[in-house]
Length: 447
Image (tube, rainbow, N blue to C red):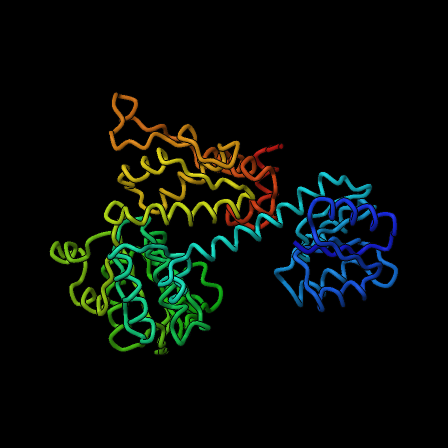
């Protein structure tokens, strides 16, 4: 792995160069920012060790230029200054790590090894994706079973058109990933992909979310708002949990699919949209139609192309491939190297029916990686993968806990998993740094 060191202190350059070469790295050094930038452009390294104070320009400016030209290049900042503002600015500009002088070579080596590990994992991940998933770029959908190959074929066939698609399958089977794959392989991939979960909003808010509203249409409508269908343009609107749509909204969605026109809530202007609609559900819509809980005319409009995603228990031959793929993803996120899977552990995976499907498998693997002390995934790190229901009175009486208690426990768990690396924690939690800081203060969490 190639390392470029940019620092104006000759003693530091010589010490780091000697240390890194001794540890098997290819090392190049420069003493100012301009020469360092030239070296990055001429022969890009895998990682840059960059001093914050340079004789010709500020190290932060060098970092900014590196990130503009090569956003994937890892930069480790080093500095003799301990002010928070500089640290924050460096991390905002995309520094991979920030190390203070005098440099602890062990700390530096750990940071460089993390970079090397991420590069190795990315290379391995590229080799794990099957040929057919690579061809369709299906955003990490992995499988070689007959059922998944049929899914891949359908993705290829429908992606070139603007046909309405209905995806049916159990929770955790990857329905939204399939919708993403259809969109990003279409001629309109540069247009927006906008997901809407039909089960998370009350009817009035969901109507406004889909079609938009005019100012004064209801209490709180202080200005005009464009809906998701309008914002999607020529892209894709993904309606998840479509079975939860109310009867009145089913009528309005049907009219849109028939006429490609709609009105904002409280408005009279008829608007047009060419957005493709992809709907998904974990319920059997045909049964809901029979029970008159879902309109038959909307059902037939939605299922111009129907895709049934097989549950994991029906494609167990894909489990070894999924385990490899998910482990690489989890290792990259948590900066771990748990890659060994004993035969007894794989057999446990193959024998289990996975009622939560791929999502459950990923959760089990994440837990196992967190609890592992080495590079091998051992049986004791796994939950009890038994299909037997819980017995006794306590199993029938679930513990009711407050939302705040659950949130606090989950945030504390993720921070512990990531060794309090706030960047990693934010990615896993799906929140911004200010939000995470706010929750840490709110719940009084400490490393």
